[in-house]
Image 1 (cartoon, rainbow, N blue to C red):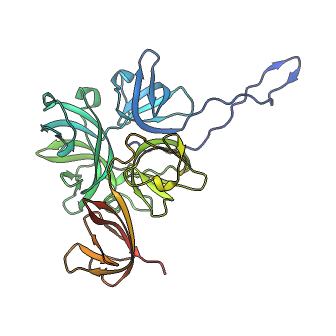
Image 2 (cartoon, one colour):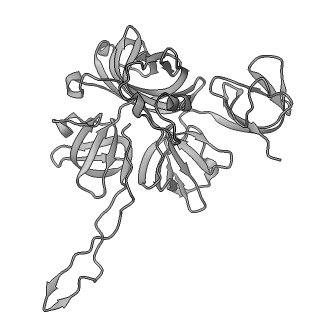
Image 3 (cartoon, rainbow, N blue to C red):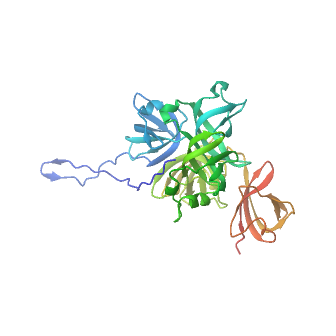
Length: 392
């Protein structure tokens, strides 16, 4: 995903009118119509006659279209409904549309309800005739029993020459091996980044750079581009998708992939961090509701300023795409004697590859510690997502 940092410069544009020797340039004038500086969502509608697209229910006039930071000569003609896009704009016109797919590649296998692209198996019913074709997949991260997976929104057949013959893949980074210069995206696709030209340019939120940022990014959302070779994704570029919305007015649709216990902070689409305060308005079925309605898996549209959610709209048709419920237990952790499980106040809790330990805890030192455990209920099992020491 293209990284964008814009100052919040939404103000009034005043125009002066001369005449009669008087000066009324200071008189109030109607403000220029403004929209969020950064908009992320899927295309609802395309109007090529008026050079306009609708995203998140709002129409925008298109100035140019780009993919992978390069302009596309055919512009709006390459856009299709349900494509994931990112818009940058200060006004109604002159919008730059960046196409932001989750995957671009060749479909290698299709079954009754799944297909495979770039080594990733996705749950989505496709026409078998698409096997072997180049496609652009738009999806959103969603919590699954294996951690973060994909909710496919659209699969669009493309001409590879229109998009630079470029393979692309986004997903959760796991199993980083610095010596072999590999990691996995999800649990399946092995990525070799030994020839990633931009590796030294990767920056973290702290002072680290390059390979150290990948170490810091374990279990975070990353984007790679390159080529599939013998089942291995040979990356020529690696990016860490960890956007914060500081200094921007944004409008983003997506799925909550993490939320803290008091519902004051959440992560959208595994990359966008937002906070909630007493002024945040939350709407569901045209009524304002309490923040308790928000949960991992909630499909929402959020409008935010400087990282603080101003309005959140819960989708009424698909309010929780994962179906998972959350839990929180406080107490003394007692090992069950079996690897990967423990109890807190008699509640059996499981540890998996996506469990995060804080406060220098780990699975070996957990027994007897006073802890706070947050997690999700998957197939009837309590699976820990975060374990930290209990506050005294």
